[in-house]
Image (tube, rainbow, N blue to C red; front, side, top):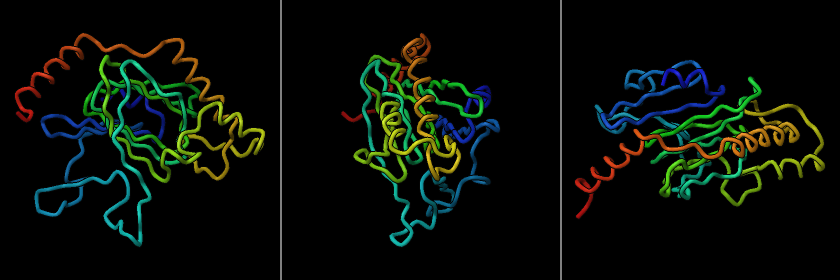
Length: 228
């Protein structure tokens, strides 16, 4: 996880939900274990803890979080068209996935391999891709702030960004973690095209031998633990 810190663009966070109950957290600043003395709040009872990903402890009908939460199924060995969301995006991967993130500060695409139990937080308007590296359908849990899939700003592709250039013209540079007062659609389109080219050149990453073995063991564990 520590090596991942040097790859992540600023604002991106990755969580590892380990089977032993430990939660590891990594961002541009490094990796550490999340614990009740730091980022966790008391969760109903003493000894139970919670860490908010969307909203906060004061969320209510008068102070809504304005977010969506959904289960997604990604086809085997497939990838979404690179895009950017108008709101913040959080994905929990329940299989072997990969995420390509455009790092605007470094001017390059950072690739992050996700494994079962890995969760990634992507800032609003950060160009990215998401792929299923495995040969079976991939289940994900995804939360978005502000937009449902029918909204025009839910997922802006390179084609859509180029279409908007003529409508709005070039505006202030605002990608990734910067506040989106006005979007530079030319910059957004170019960043998404970079991800497309990388995705086309390298293809969808493979599942390693160790990951395939681990997947078999998880299926065996489910056969023992699952309902009968």
